Image (tube, rainbow, N blue to C red; front, side, top):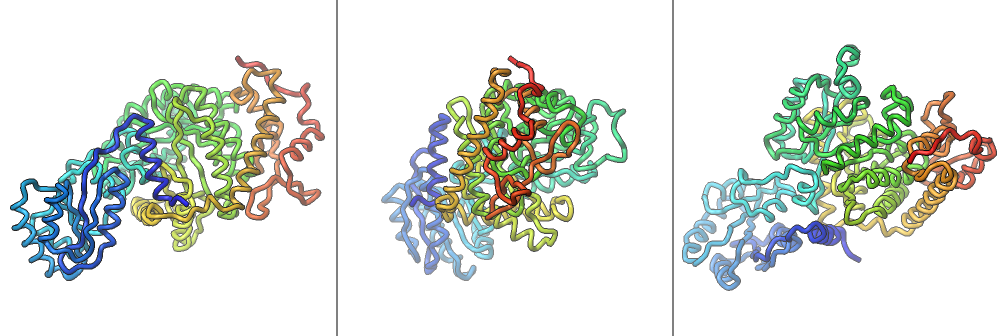
Length: 581
């Protein structure tokens, strides 16, 4: 069976070929432990990583003498030599001095790399011989970046400034993103700088408060009592530029920001101009009268979403429709989340998006079992990527669900690590890290850095060979069941509305009508004269299923929709849709 690391490397190479990016030319690395050191794991792992990046490698083994190393360099005309030493720091000095002196006889100097414990690396650094020294605090992405660029100094690092280029640069290591925005603008600026200096994140996801999302262009309508509610208050374009400037240090993380809940395209223009918004994230069904995060009608917000998506597509800015987890967070059953994944990608593709970010939030509802949660996400991935082709690239983004994390911060740290390991099963391009403190308080820079390091530890282990949980027969069976049920619901919607709409899946009036009738529904949708909110769900055998309380049984989609029909909610004469070309 192919291991995760092999799949990740294969994916990387195939992606480079598909995108027309040249894989690095053949270079040869010799790896060994030097002198009397027999610890070779570091050198072996480094060579394994190099092989995945199309290097040729020669493993010389443990306790290799200096003369032998130089003989191998001459024989193979090595481009790089990676040497390890993990014993007493003082004992390495004469070995490196010997290497330094004898290497002068080489006709051509390779790039010399050293790896060891922090005390040994500190001593070796004083000797001034090696081009690059690893002391064990680096992560796999640091090694990947070095092997790709072979930079001799950290200041020569190249940090890609677009999402797709950054993904290519770091693959197979996923990009790491975290949400950040404090009620104080000044503290947020300072925090962005601290996070960038830590070099742990690739994307700072700027969380702005509701006043900014809704009233950026109408300051007279802001409620001062709500300043800082849910994020950082940003009052003008200059403040956005100040936040971006704060990120331009360390590893120069990308920056992105929430979409507005009003004046969506004008705000998108501001974000593109000020923070070079890495990608747009927009929901289809939310940020309106349905969830109270705006005053727009459901149909109006969908049309605004279409305009916003098309605006970004024309400019080739990636787009994410963060739709599926909105339904999951409201305890909709798993089938709804799978269908929402398809509808999201369908809208993005039809509106001309070339690079699509598909977010998969694990652990929602929080009581899902890990196996059934994985099955749901696998179904979402498969139905989403069924739309992928040469003009529509799908990038997977995973994250831990907020309701999953405990208010006990030590427990939450364990849950964050466990969820990340599960997420690695689907080979994400981006991991949206969730701070372990979120169940108790908003993440501070310190919490963000710590949480990201926890996630990095999991990624490191998984990239070296993860358990293939996706092959579990129970997981595969549930995935097929969800895909069949999702197909039933999609066909039902298409058949019900095909006589009034040329494209029911894309029509805001059709989709809004589906919500009003309960075809697309969730238990947490407020019941009122407009919306049903009549769906009932239960966790059974680790799955979130539609449920009928009267019979105390789970419902298939056929059974659920038959009940709506029996209640008179699906009669054509009551439909409120009109044809939209």
